[in-house]
Image 1 (cartoon, rainbow, N blue to C red):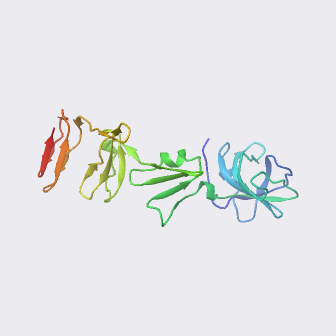
Image 2: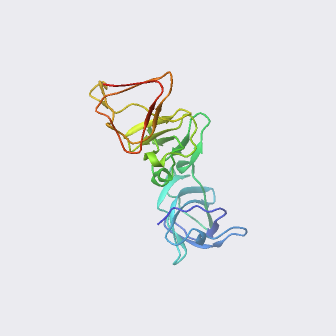
Image 3: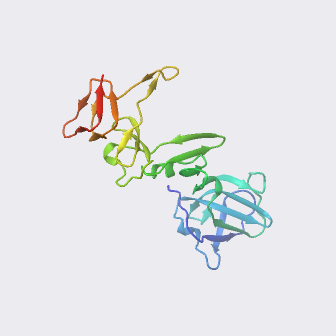
Length: 230
């Protein structure tokens, strides 16, 4: 089922211990967890006295319960807390699963390990940096030539799955950023053999390709500068 986050969802629970909680009804001014939908997961916070727990749980309509599937953080050193008496449970948006703009980072910083849903929604207009634990990596938006952003800004970068190249928008058009590197030390650079887009080489610039090169039907290469095919 889906991961669902809703605003102002809060209930009380009289469940004790570290297991699944039975929900006791919406608090005044809040929605019940039924807003999440039967079988869907959500981010939750549990508060029991001075103890607290943030995690991922699954709402089940039958019995109106919320499981504690994954504990992300807690006052019990990251483990499930032991509930006592009447506790509060509500939807939250935990830092471990947050996507936000960092002023020191050119793009969207996505934190956590369960990023598939976020990445699948990313468009070719966003540069993504992914942080998973202590290891960082860069993931480019990917798509065909036809799926390019309709109104890009200079500096946008993406992987073109049609041409199998990384390309950057320079303000007037999409420019391929070289081909793959082969061999230790990246001694050999490669380029494709079929042009399947319209390309203009601006006046005052030089282009070079290694042939044979085929220009696919309906596409053109306009050479205002110089294009050398070796």
